[in-house]
Length: 289
Image (cartoon, rainbow, N blue to C red; front, side, top):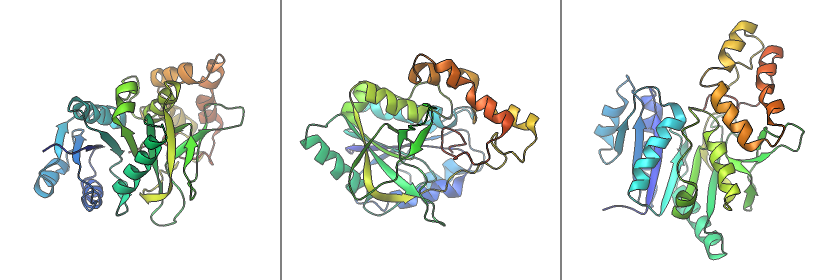
């Protein structure tokens, strides 16, 4: 029997991490179905999932889908079956007990107050330091309008501009209006773009109170932003899939940065040259999965 909620995931070659995520997920009390893209893992991830969680719908990738492509494939499969709710879940996110019930209750409360076209975002913290990592995002008030900053959760619901896709509850109304993640993106920007497109279409995005689980924040070490890396290495990495590849970054800037988007477009490449060691490792600027 189809459940009212579909959990959307993607993974690649981190079997134990993915299994830990699923273990916490299956401790939730609310019923759900899981659609998971295994993007060509060679470490036995699919076999391990089948052995422990045979009810998971596993879709196969070719190794080149990355985060956006993998999530897009699983999301498309689930949307064909018409669920009431969809939960994006990063496979390195460990949910607290009762998270699904908590997020669904928040959405129902919003819907009762006329906000049926709503997205509810869960915030995560680092399992070791307890520091905030991912969740809702607001556009920076600084001149650099393409920078999105983490919105720390409080005891109250907060509205935000967009979100990082680690734990995101999307209603069927939003899914029908916005559709899937945009195929223009490969690894980064797809989650931020989805939220920004949703807002433009009249949807609202809300950060749930408190934290829903843990997720380690990506480091800038050995990335295009690490000033300890040679300049040539930084320049190579900034245009790679997990940096700022030209085509997706152009789509994002031209779509969301206003009439002077070209000026913003140059900034990450300039930063790769000069270095920016303290750059926050959000999914916009660093590896997401």
